[in-house]
Length: 304
Ligand code: PSU
Image (cartoon, rainbow, N blue to C red; front, side, top):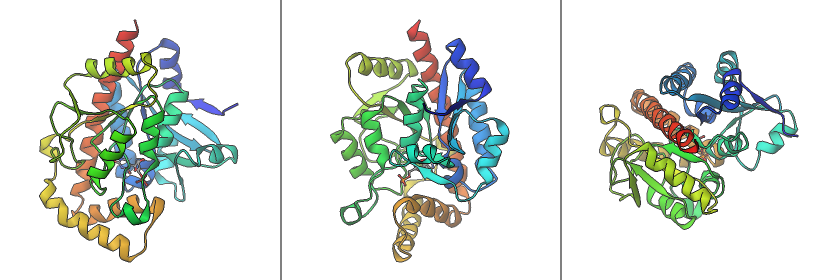
């Protein structure tokens, strides 16, 4: 038996067959500083409700898999330190041993699928890190997208990664990469990149139809919807490039590795942009939450 606890609103939505959107918690514990992390998590949940769906923020707390957090639980998680960052490899061990951990994209997809939630919104997925040819640092998020049938809405992969290699791996794994409303893959803090998108869709209805067709055809895995940050909030790629380079050099000289790399880089880029990267990150997550709600509603409508 898996110890799963649904929040009151998620339990009600499940009982009514209403549209749900899963949200991850690593972005809260490892991706943003307090108090903006908790404020953002609340705003993102409110955006999903305003769009007509129910948010389900996912985390492991004291050995229970929470699908939907009550407001006090969200607040506590946002202030907790030494929270584990859980992926496919360690989520079961954390639950089994009574631990507490935040879920990455991979672990959130697993939990969302267990709870029958077909759509999940985040900021940016993990991917192939720069220098992966020697470090072998490739996020488990990519393999999860290849095997768990959840549609993930993100602003691409985080621009601290080797984006061309990340998208090569996704292509090899058979993960559809669908750009929303444009012909190129967005680059997290920037709406545009020079990478042509393999697929483009312009409506939530099309994305929902593609999700259902994969299931009907027995194709394993999910879809990655890359949703560009609103242009008013973006940081041009040229402005960010030297900053990302500096953060990467610092990570290397300090021997930061494995799960610590992404939080370190995000934290340094926040400092080096005087907080502008966080403002952009918040805007893109909210934008992704709104699209995920539309997709979830379209899926629920098509089920009727
Ligand atoms: N989106 C954000 N900020 C984040 C993340 C996503 O805007 O911090 C998290 C997700 O949980 C993702 C993780 O799974 O970063 C990737 O970590 P890694 O590169 O160590 O796999």
